[in-house]
Image (tube, rainbow, N blue to C red; front, side, top):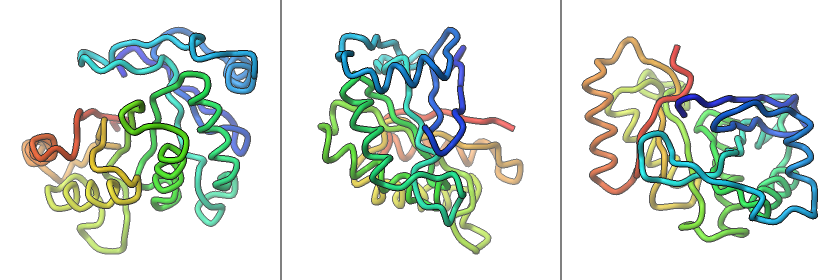
Length: 202
């Protein structure tokens, strides 16, 4: 998000979190998530960029959800679910993942947790596309083919019929931006994606 601050907490303790504005410390985040005296009123909400969508100022990132076969600091599903549950109890409604996190396991874990602990229409799910998801030449990047294939795969892993915010994870210098943008627009028109965005653009 424009003007946002992203904070990565050292795994395996917590996944990374993003704050829409202002400074935020690790101690504040830990206190916020695990202070049982807090209620949903402790969270405030802002518009997502220039869109009308309202999201919590804190976005719970799930890069460390998955299996240790991917990274040694990844936390298992039980620990991940506890974090998602506490975030929801605190009023957080904004959750970020990506297809490449634990080769898709992060999306699966997040999808199951949100299904079990919340209503789909009460949460905003963001995921990303670009990274390698297989050995083939079209299993990565921002071509029309890969964007369509990746979106369908993410929908299946997240166990949902739409993605609230679909982001390109990196630039793809081999694909014309017109091809990428037309593919993303078609996903929106098809009802598979509600909003589009960009993540770490380098």
